[in-house]
View (cartoon, rainbow, N blue to C red):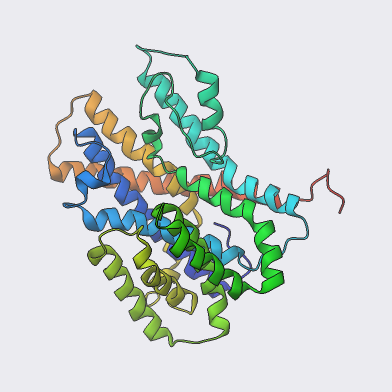
Length: 352
């Protein structure tokens, strides 16, 4: 989620975009959490017929987050890879630990009458691994503990995989060229990986599409008005027509969507509005913490046996959402920014 070294306009578009992506994921988990606490389980398949657009919103948000990472790091050439990973750790770890610690305290609170410390330390390791392993086991005997924060840290497993692959990717990029590398990876994903594991194929492809979108503006130009219309049409298609976002056949549509943004599309100025740009700064906090807000709200309603009609439930949820956004702007200001600055400092153990 770094901003990179692009022009101010490019940064503003990406930051504004990040807010909408985080919001889309939050709305998806809003629906899933409601379903979970009302006895329908945490299942996309159960809810797909009734809530296809909302489910596709969540998946599309994650897909574009992956593409942004590929876009930002396509041309990376760090002087020190140790320094690079130092910055990544300082960017990812602080809010990750905040989210995990809150999950642990909530699990303790919920399990106080049935406290089980078996395998606690083994479980704790996975909850404090910065998302590298991608596994979140039960806490204190609480099954589905990963749902306390909506299980969002699974995406960090793929982000770290991308970061760890970059040294090799950079060597190959410099040897055969970026476009040749992009073509090779996409070919492997489509024809060799997707037949056995379509999700893995599309996740890897998303990072690769980001690199493609970084390169294409050097070759072709599309008028901004066409880009904006293209964004609207591709988003509408992916939300309302596509049966499933994580489907290899829709890669060209998702690629077009982000390419339109990379070539100047800003949704008729919407992505550059200052309010959305500022909220986009806090998108990582919003992404990692929104599940706690929905889970806490629904658990409180359940424990206290509060009966809310649809209107009152929506009003309460809206208030919770606004509180969440305020809280996340504070975590960005007082947690994320200081640690990002720390990550840019010279490391005392490295030769400068």
